[in-house]
Length: 67
Image 1 (cartoon, helix red, strand yellow):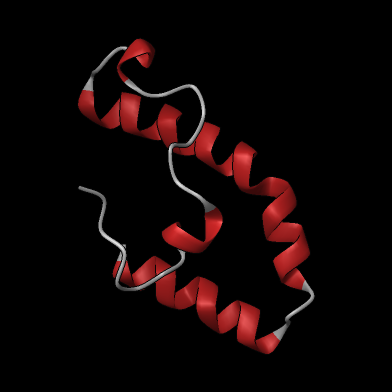
Image 2 (spheres, helix red, strand yellow):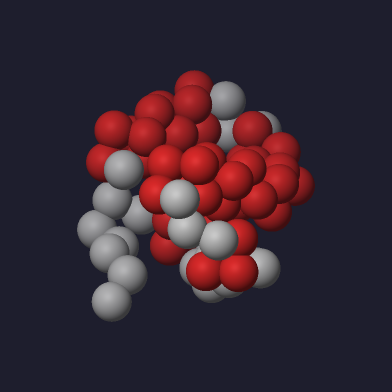
């Protein structure tokens, strides 16, 4: 997670205009992440929230760790 957060931060620092794009695709990215988590864990889709329970600023914050 830390590595991917760093990559997102670098991309946003290099191209601040990407922030609006990230906001647009955030929901789609979550859906793809759930599909990947399902494949990797074998859990049912129903095991995951339909909507990401976190806000974009949280998931891009290096210090944020869900409870």
